[in-house]
Length: 369
Length: 225
Image (tube, rainbow over all chains, first blue to last red; front, top):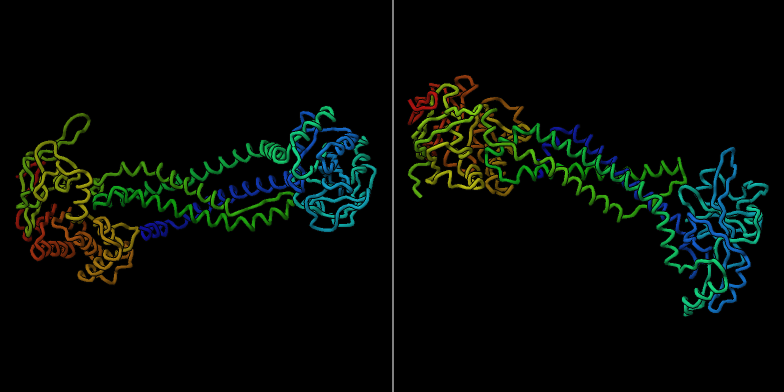
């Protein structure tokens, strides 16, 4: 059977080659979108996930740091530290900030943190070091690459000049990137001292978190308290709500295009091969022989397209990353399996849909030719 | 199951519906054919020869009357049994040979063996031996479009015989061939009936075949004359 499929493909090699290329483009797009989603997912939530934070304290009705505003008085810090079971409290202040770099407008998600506190800084320093003074800043890897910034370069934010002391990883949210300065500097930039966005709390081992939460709400007015897992979930969902609808629409379009390409090509092949299929039926070919032939043809085209798409993915992503460093992708074997299964299912459905025509080919037709 | 006759038609009439009116393709046909016999259905085009053959092969059913194949009414066979019978017990030689142009000569022959349930390796060996037997073993890898008419003729015969078919049905096998080539295929088919004890039924308008046939049936406007 495989041999017969090989001969059919060989006969119309240019057509099938272009079909496989079309499939590979769809696969490439699907693979890229899923990798992009994973990259954004990682970059958006890695800051929240990093370090050890048992409880997050935010302003009441704020549930995440990505798309909700939270402002709390810095003075809560002392109250929080005094609560039984709280080991440490790290204040963080988030600020959307516009800067001008090399005559280009840039935005950053400026994060002010207390260097003396345990948490709040960059999840990972991949080059240079963290900040040691108020005149330093740590910027994201993609941001640095996009604007050609290196360690020691100076960034002008409002009236302050900040020197890049380090470059961080896990801080790229695709649409915007984290940057880290001292808490005092973030207050200067915002012009509102003694306010923070959240407190990251570490508790004593084995303490009763429920009673700590309750005590926080008694001591500090109008706050929301989230446990680590819940807070990560809140931020992940917030990120997903923003990107998943777009991703789903483009994925659906790719899948429909893929199914359309395959169905069209298979239908044309069946119409063109009508004479041959009628002869086969006259010669007594078993009921499912032609259907299997079409299924294998479809699977061969899908497999060829899949292989080309996956092989093309890595160089294409490398080119895209050079052009737009903020586009961070993360690929895995699981994605390859997921996409391969999806393409296989589409190829089977396309061949079944096209194969309806086979039923209407009769052995009697062989006597007409 | 009485297998005295390989194929038999008892009072067979076939109407085709055209614009709501029945057009008779065959009328009250009685016919039988045995192994070792070569029968010629002679008649001009439109006389009902092809309808006769397709009824015999169980590809369509008569409007009235009965068609018997290998001792059993074709109406009693299921569609799957008819398909299997065409693959295992009936060999076809079509007008213009109708080889499958996408596949090499060897695959054209092997394919009918796989239809009959043979494994690929067995099909390859048997097909090659048939090609050798017909003197065209060197053409196994050639595409049908690259071989001559005479060679196509032999491939078509090899395809009809390779499964050991008991009944060979040939529709206008000399149709578009020059006289010498045309007679060559008839000689091959005659050899099948006499030498290999097969039942051969040929539909043709070519009167030259009469000398080879054991039995001649003349058809005109769907009736035996």
